[in-house]
Image 1 (spheres, helix red, strand yellow):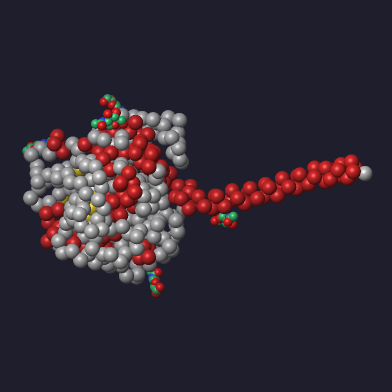
Image 2 (image 1 turned 90 degrees about the vertical axis):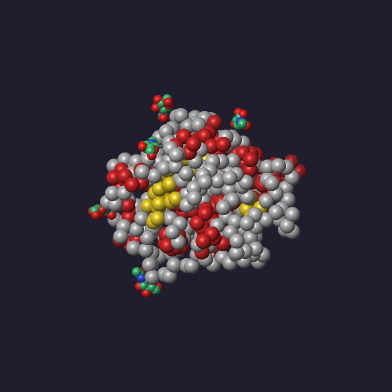
Length: 446
Ligand SMILES: *[C@@H]1O[C@H](CO)[C@@H](O)[C@H](O)[C@H]1NC(C)=O
Ligand SMILES: *[C@@H]1O[C@H](CO)[C@@H](O)[C@H](O)[C@H]1NC(C)=O
Ligand SMILES: *[C@@H]1O[C@H](CO)[C@@H](O)[C@H](O)[C@H]1NC(C)=O
Ligand SMILES: *[C@@H]1O[C@H](CO)[C@@H](O)[C@H](O)[C@H]1NC(C)=O
Ligand SMILES: *[C@@H]1O[C@H](CO)[C@@H](O)[C@H](O)[C@H]1NC(C)=O
Ligand SMILES: *[C@@H]1O[C@H](CO)[C@@H](O)[C@H](O)[C@H]1NC(C)=O
């Protein structure tokens, strides 16, 4: 009897095993979907297929704003900085300023005077002590204090990050800020192993070859070329190429468009995500990847650890160790001969600073605050304003943008799209203000 009962129980148990297994499978599937949904947020930044509502150059998530030009552009100067003198470096002994040991950071943080802001803003920055690369008498940095932009402009903001910045103190400070505004999505080892490779003076000088090139000139003149449709039939190519340096970004197709956009590229700005998106979306327009030339430097806009991993792999000619770009062979985006001297990376403080002080969009008060950032083109133009002595901007959005296609290389007219992760109208307004202030010359096709 006892044996029979045990056999019966055993039989029951065995026959229920498949049921339990099926329940387990279901649970696991649900669990996997949870994980998927959790990772979908960052995942969407590089897995989503392009479509007409999605700006393929950018890590966009949702299109909430309709293309409605009657919406008043937001006023960029919503930031009230109390200090009247620009770019003052406060000593670290000031209460509230961080003090750091070691000689890497001479204590100085650029601080904001506004105490009531939410912590994600973080309006205090590393202060670079390197002198400017030129002594141009008519530089932007010397003119800015006479304009409305004087109170916002920090002349000592670090534009590029490199080996010196990879310290535990800096990591503690910057790990508070997610995405491209800090190092929250980056573990310390990845940070150190990448930035330690960027240890040459070319990694912290934007114009590392200026001594060879200046030809007696005291001023660095830059052409910054966006991809806007306004360049179609502009015949600005020769003028663009006449500058000391030419900046480009994302799907900058050159072949076949030289008359309108020029042929040189000195600095190519991209994030790994926008580069991959551009290669996929603009292949039809002839975009095959970053421009390759002897003078071209590649400037990463890091918004994820994949940027740090690709940078390191590119600089050391090793495979990308993990993440979406993981590879068995070294990456080839930058040509077979790329050296570490040709690679640079924007500093998260620089991106956070321009977001906070130049592109303080309404999205920053919404649940989209973590995905909002200045567009790649805006970062490039602001970087030029903070490094060049003179800046001419071409192919950036103007108030009559509806007359032009989204990109100069579009096969047919395609309207400019608006997305929540950028604020293109705010950016457009800023270009107008900078032009009126005489800080840039904006091509407007009058
Ligand atoms: C995951 O997200 C998709 C769409 O975003 C949704 O349809 C699905 O129900 C979600 N799954 C879970 C387990 O939340
Ligand atoms: C823009 O929005 C306003 C109000 O929502 C509407 O009256 C107007 O027709 C819209 N314009 C366009 C071009 O869609
Ligand atoms: C820079 O880093 C490389 C390794 O990535 C190393 O071989 C080299 O010695 C370093 N140079 C300096 C000046 O520290
Ligand atoms: C350098 O300057 C001289 C005189 O201003 C000019 O003739 C020459 O073409 C310049 N060289 C280059 C490479 O720009
Ligand atoms: C690499 O450098 C060599 C020698 O300078 C040059 O001949 C070759 O074209 C370069 N290759 C690429 C892909 O730039
Ligand atoms: C570029 O300009 C030409 C001439 O005005 C025009 O025919 C063409 O449609 C334009 N291309 C786009 C994509 O708007």
